[in-house]
Length: 123
Image (cartoon, rainbow, N blue to C red):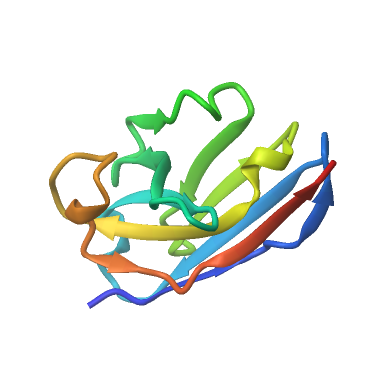
């Protein structure tokens, strides 16, 4: 079992930056591949970024490439999402998730989810 708790979401102006954190419980955190997803009102949950357990690979949605960076600290059981050059269209609830296997961009392959943190970008 893994429990995930996100933090760091808030209201920010366009062009600003935020860093989201996701703290995980459990002693096997490093064995999980982690992902960030977001869901805007009226839209489906969408992949944002992913990172493998061994930190060897990272993945990004085209819409955030060059602006967002995913990272993790396995010693602290935490995964981060650094978001720069934020745009109003980045407004959403952001979720972190953990998976053992499967396709990194498919929500259904993730086994554990956090409760989400709201990011609002004003124009």
